[in-house]
Amino acid sequence: MIDAAFIQRVQAIVGDAGLVTDTIDIEPYVRDWRGNYLGKTSLVVRPANTGEVADVVKLCAETGVPIVPQGGNTGMVGGGVPDSSGRAIIISLTRMNKIRSIDLANSAMTVEAGCILAAVQEAALRCERYFPLSLAAEGSCTIGGNLSTNAGGTAVLRFGNARDLVLGIEAVTPEGNIWHGLKALRKDNTGYDLKHLLMGAEGTLGIITAAVLKLFPKAQRTCTALVAVSDPAAAVELLATIQGAMGDRLTGFELMSRVCLDHVIKHFPETPEPFSARHAWQVLVELTDTMKDSPLEDTLSMALQPAFESGKAVDAVIATSEAQAQALWNMREHVPPAEKLQGRSVKHDISMPISTIAEFIQRGDAALNARFPQAQVICFGHIGDGNLHYNLSFPGMLPSAEQTRDANNIVYTLLDELAGSISAEHGLGQMKREEITKHKSRVELDMMRAIKAALDPKGIMNPGKVL
Ligand code: FAD
Ligand code: 2HG
Ligand code: ZN
Image (tube, rainbow, N blue to C red; front, top):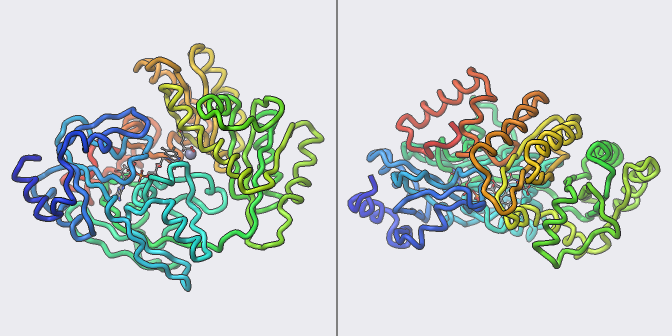
């Protein structure tokens, strides 16, 4: 129970600088970015180091106080905010934001969990290296949150998800013990790979306090282009064509419907119209190379030629300056904030075999438009990874429980048919905790529950999330 005596014991561990108890100061920690979840707590703890995290967790294990770990609180599924009981405390890692070391010989960087993603990217660039995780929330999300959600983003196509970018982690177990797993090894077959259990666990198995991240050579050439295509099938065909021509120089391939651009241009009027005509679908293509004289633009133009001849590509702009490239990325990255300004939506972060994307969009649109003529499908995402953000926007109204249920049923039934997943990159959190039980087998759910019970027998670590 969070009473005065408990708060005093926490204060003895973290000092005044590590405590937030004022209701107004607590507010940003209990509300999620999208405004879908409002939780309750009377204590946010901000430890300064791993020892303090461990001591606070030990105290919680002793007293049975549940813990919600939190980083930048940019998560999309309510995983980082407490429930409304007021029983849990939040442990925010944001004060633990040191880059502990950069090891160029091993192409590795050791960072604390509260490091902001953009700060990690910048530190890598300062050493002529590259840390590839990239997403629109990078100015405020943290490495701890990125690893705990196994975040995706816009460069998964070439570099993989967050878990692929990690060599080792340090974590505090639900009993308050510290696991010192900060090795920078690229090969280590010594039994169960525990770091992969904690990554993607959304804070339900322990608290990640630091990580050893992989660094990559910095790109010397970048080519960014926006290509308007006739339909999603043409986009998928273009993906294969460009991959065939340019291999893993293709680092990003992002689909956006015209509806997405309309919302971005409406809410962020400084956004320029990319083409002289309106096109129903466009893909943002990013190519990079570590070789200085790589002819990326010429190779891309040649690769696009057959698509133009067949009418599958209908227009294209290739950025000729860094500012133009940035403007194209701004357009893409403003889709979620524009959707938020448009009002409430039922969000679907889904994946499916790339070969089924066009069929999914065609059948999904037809079913959703028939059931919800007043709503609008917002379709965009990382189609190079088979990952769509397929949201249903209800401007000016709050979708009812029944509407949300029906929208989910339409999307998830179709996904089951196509062997897809109900969460590609945001995780389950509170939002999909019930839903997942309909899409995973008993065997799979039982194994997950057994792991949770073994590592967190008191059930204090982020209860009510994932399982
Ligand atoms: P939080 O939101 O604070 O927490 C997320 C989860 O991780 C919670 O369950 C929390 O309990 C847990 N957690 C946090 N820190 C720790 C820790 N140190 N140890 C254990 N558990 C912890 N996601 C993508 O994958 N791809 C995208 O392209 C993408 N784009 C986004 C764009 C916008 C505009 C926004 C707002 C979000 C986007 N996201 C995206 C969502 C994404 O999950 C988060 O941005 C990010 O990975 C979460 O980091 P965070 O520090 O904000 O974590
Ligand atoms: C993105 O790719 C994020 O921009 C957010 O994953 C997706 O808002 C969304 O639905
Ligand atoms: Zn995404």
